[in-house]
Image (cartoon, rainbow, N blue to C red; front, side, top):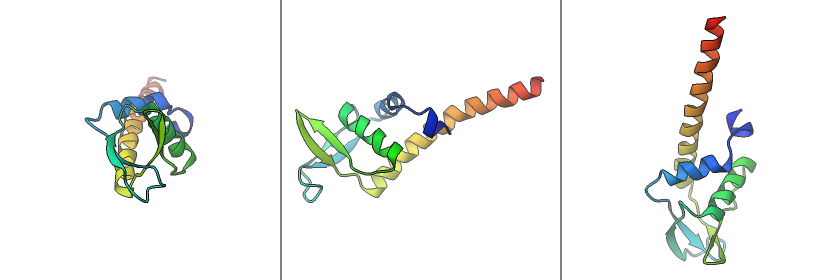
Length: 108
C-alpha cells in the first residue's frame, strides 16, 4: 500500500543520497558496450527515470549526463540491492504507521 500510494520520487532521492556512491555502467548503444561506470546517486534525471520504472514495473533506465542521454545498465544484482534499500525504507515508514495504529486501538 505504501509503495503504490505514498512512495514518491523525493523519498527515492533521499534514499540514494544516503549512499556513499551509486556507481552504475552507462552505454550509448542499448547496453551492448559499456561506455563507463559513473556515480548516479545525485543524477535527478536517472532517479526520476528509476522511480518511474520501479512504479511501472519496467526496466528502461536512462540518465542525462552533460546534456546527453545514456542507457543505464542495471544488472539483476544491482537492481536487487537498490530494491532492498527501498524495501527497508518502506518497512521503516510502515512500522511507524502500524505502531500508531496499534497504539490507537489499545487506547480505545
